[in-house]
Amino acid sequence: MMTPAPSADFSPAISNYRFTDPSFLTEALTHRSYVNERRESGRKHNERLEFLGDAVLSLIMSDYLARRYPELSEGALSKLKARLVSEAPLANAARRMDLGARLKLGRGEELSNGRDKASLLADAFEAVIAAVYLDGGLDASRSFTIEALTDELRRIDVRQEKPGSDDYKTRFQEWCQKRHELLPRYVVVSETGPDHHRFFEVEVHVNDEVLGIGRGHSKKEAEQEAAQRALEHVER
Image (tube, rainbow, N blue to C red):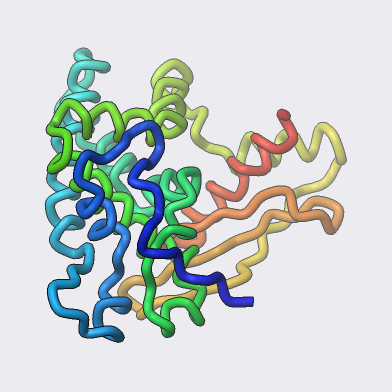
């Protein structure tokens, strides 16, 4: 069943931030496909805000990491930032905020499951960061962004305390061998996008049960995320 598009009068709040000017949020959640199908005068899509949000996000994360880990080299900080601002964590943050349900999409994107496309969600998340920045300033956008990425920032803390702890496949394999005396099985359930920008979705199975789903631009990245989700599931 196709998810109905959100109404124009949706709440001007997102996460714990309430917009003074809701038009910023409306623009951030409006995809180009929605505008192209309607040709409404004055209607804006979110690519302008996505461009700005990318820069604001980079500044916020650079500042956060430099303050949080003063002992790390420039190269190590750059690697941490690249991991944080990549598509998968941004899309996951967008999913936690249920941005997909609030997007204004054209019919084509609706039919192709656009509300759960990682690239589309990551772009929308960056656009929302820019919207908060324009509406409330840098401090507001910093608070919003750090709260939205709390899970990802916490995982980086763990990695810094326990080097190698982000090898989720190895950790989950050890858990399976100890608990079930077998190895997990990874299954690619979808592969989309052009050859130069492939996107994979992978399930990890144990005893024919799906324990985790991961997404990424390589099978390895998707498998690591699937193993991470499986570990979170079994540890709960």
